[in-house]
Length: 113
Image (cartoon, rainbow, N blue to C red):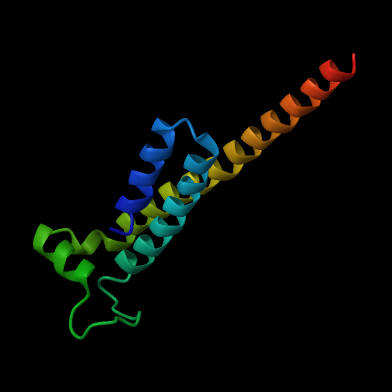
C-alpha cells in the first residue's frame, strides 16, 4: 500500500493531464521507497523498532522467498530507485514551473504589443 498509492495517483493525474501533480506524486513515491528500503535492509539485523511484536514482515517474506541474505543488496537497489524518483520529481517539477512562467511571460508580451 505504501508504494501502491503514489503509483495509482501518478496514473490518475497523468490521465487527467495534471502533470505537475503527477510529478509531485513521484516525489511521494521516492519518499515511500526510502522507507521500504530502510526496513527491508534491516530484515536480518532487526535493529529498527517494529510496531508489532515478533519478526519483521520483510524478514518473513525474504526468508520465505529464500533471499534473506540479499536484504541489504535489494534495499540498496530500492534506495537507488527512490533517488531516481526524487530527482525526476524535482527536475521535471522545475521544468513544468519554468514552462508555465515562460508561457505567462510570452502571453503578457503578446498582450502589450
